[in-house]
Image 1 (cartoon, rainbow, N blue to C red):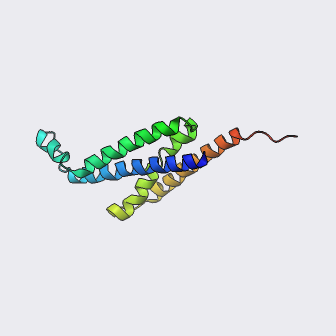
Image 2: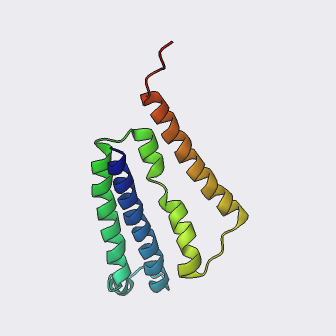
Image 3: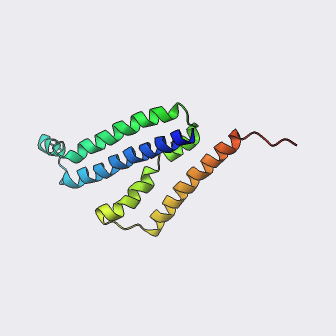
Length: 130
């Protein structure tokens, strides 16, 4: 079952991260923002929009498969790791810088997921015989 979780959450992280990175690229190519049909057609001519859609579709089906087996608390928390992966990938891809607050937030996100996962595994472990 651990292999299932590792592969499943790895795939979920990959799909979610793909969607976030593609949305960033799509947003960069969609400027200037205009509320008209020309802008909408220009937006949908960008391949990044379709990468984002593919990422979200992949994430949806992966998430539905994981929910059949994974405990909801740690699973829901782990499903938000794309915040951390997107932050880390934004440095080499977009040349962005990570502030101290962003770094601390990423550490807290990962720490929270670890705490939830450990508490769930502790709850599954039978008590030791006296």
